[in-house]
Length: 167
Image 1 (tube, rainbow, N blue to C red):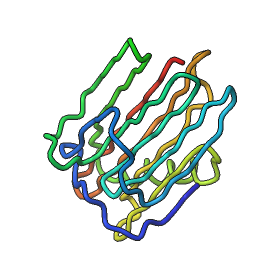
Image 2: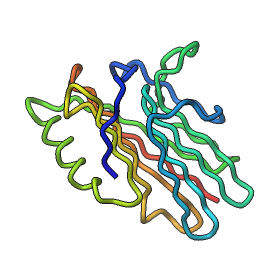
Image 3: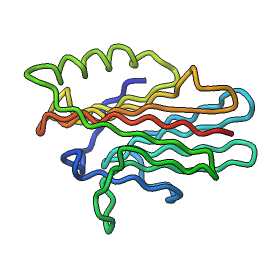
């Protein structure tokens, strides 16, 4: 689902992002609720300061926030593992050359616009100012996963994250 957001984004670069687990739901600009097989419920949330995913499944409740978080120093780890909760997170920051950021964002928008398991938010002022979330349709057995993209045209950065949670 492709949505145009009516709010400027709060975060301004990859260096402003933090990862938080277990936070409460923050005010969202747009929300997509998904019911997956095996009683898995996901809530994809676009924030003015990036994204939040809420997972509820039998015996598991998890909230992942990747955003500019007031009162918290910015720190986006390349990897975070929480074996007790079956949580695996990875993040990569790309700095594409030339017009490659625009090309990547256009491709992403085209691929995810009609995907019922994806949410793409375009911020006003620049078609490349995008936050996107997509549920993985091919996670390992007994797991659920999602990917996100955060594009910052003003700093020519693209932040890619991937999360897998074993249930």
